[in-house]
Length: 226
Image 1: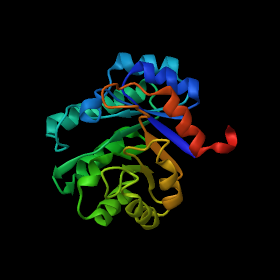
Image 2: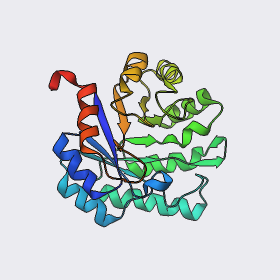
Image 3: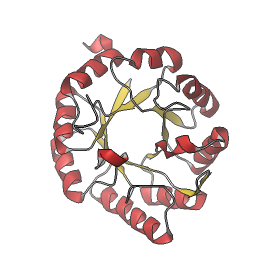
Image 4: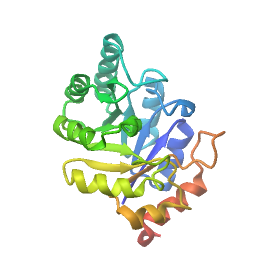
């Protein structure tokens, strides 16, 4: 099972490499859930880490309803990071609070030029989740980062299983939200995901991954490797 580590600081990147993490979601500003990283941060992460780096594309905090001008900047960011060696992208867009902006999503996927695209947890605000999954699958998204219908992935594990059954092989459901070594077994027993997402933090005050927590989490999902 693969663990994707959300990293908000270059120190987390070094910890991820030391612990054997396979993929990063690279972003800045943990306080708002993550924003587009700087080019300097991305370049430093690429030097320090030898696994895949997926880049968050989100220009500001707040809602995910982006103006034409904001979306143009996001498309430029995708192309910029693609040219610098990004392995994939993470983003989301809405035309109103309950409607995925299908045209903007299509443009972002075009800008990815075949690289994997993860629709992020903004999806969890949708009431009609099956309709949302249909839109993502039709657009060609690779993954959906979601906690189901819970505040955390463990709380939403029943819905996560339903989402996996509904999307089948057309969309990888990536559980995320509050996953830690202390609770991941409940998630694994319930929906058996192929991948999980965590920041491996020990609290909310420090945005740097906790090495002990990360090692424990990795041991829980891949015990045969310990």
